[in-house]
Length: 148
Image 1 (cartoon, one colour):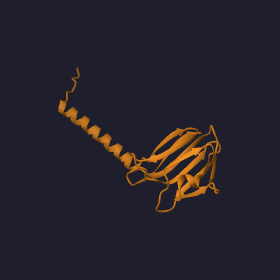
Image 2 (cartoon, rainbow, N blue to C red):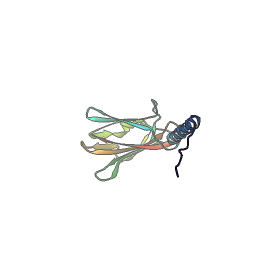
Image 3 (cartoon, rainbow, N blue to C red):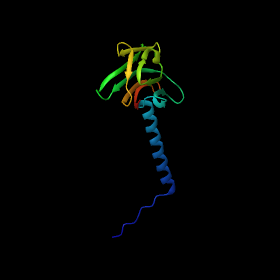
Image 4 (tube, rainbow, N blue to C red):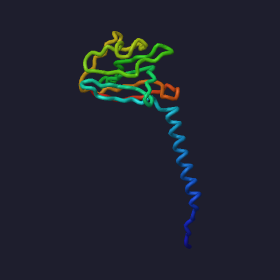
């Protein structure tokens, strides 16, 4: 018994393809709206690392920031914003001592370290996690790694 291939019209094929593309676009929009955090741009600037969180070209500020030392797994920097505000979404980390209050501005409430001074080492891969507006009115987290 021979099986004959089923032919579909070009119009049906195009309609199915268009429906698939629309479904993928809807998933992408849902991801950006509900799941994605602010985009993080990490650049080396000389011996330092410049981190910027933004949506398109806009800096919407951050509500929380953590830096984790992978050697111990401990949080070596934890900053939150004063309720109802955000703090600077640009920060430059350098090897050695970093004054967090100066880097993030007056809206930043430093939780760790208690003295507001962060000491970073060369050659260590730090894990940065930030929480901020994703451009759609939702506060979500993003993370990145950098080495000084």
